[in-house]
Length: 408
Image: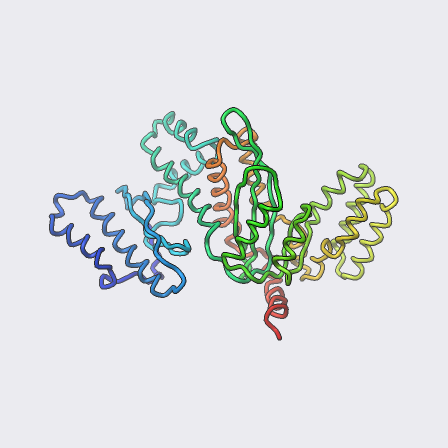
């Protein structure tokens, strides 16, 4: 079980009266009558409670919120520990190993996560374990799965920083199995680029039914209720009516419509030959370093196709400033701000899982599990490092943020 030596752990004098009474009872009744697992679990609980009290003492706007059970390994000894939590979900005892890990051998950890990722449901993963003669690990497998689901739910309620450099929002259609039929569902995703340059998922909710504006209002208002206030740029697709909602909630932000979604729309409206020319002209426009020249090229593009596709071109012209908004940002990060690809990183992993599961998800919990795993892999993997394109432009982005929101 790993610990962080840099963390300030509570001293024995900080243990609560109840925690000390628990330890005193263990000594009074005789350690010989208790198993080593009970002693260690009680001691860990007492230390974790003391650390929570220390955390709450220095956090005015948070409160204790009971406990949840956690299975872990201390060396070769399996323990069931009651872990204290807070309402915000921000507190996590430093004595715990990293999320979803229990100090298993690396091979066991990889096996459990691999089974959960590739199986259609937790029960299917358990069946695979039994076939391998590893049924003793079934309870641990379910505990790991439950932690991914709990972490996903906590992600949708945690307090947020007030400031973001960029907010990326998009939705994905999926199907859930309900008895003998499939039901449509929509995954609403909101990802943020923090002022420190790191990306993270702010909200990830699954709602039954097709994408709709009422659900988007719920998601976006939830971000504001959790603390988000100032956003430099919001990047989204052109779902009907969504742009006006986002403008109303984040009026001081720039609003970029995804160029890739525009290209998909063009493919459905234009002939094959015209679409190829449309994309060629668009690539030239995106590479243009000057905003004014890009605006002129956009107008030339519209004039070229206006006679053949008047309705489509009229919509493009109406939203010209929102399609070209990314050109007002540092060149190294323009590509990242012109599309919702940050959200697509999550959707892409989910799409691979969906195909491996036969094209649909077997339950809402199974979908939450896969989402939790996909997000965890991203945030503990490629998203742990600041992208080179972001790092190059980070000081400029923060300067833009300060000029807009903080300078008189």
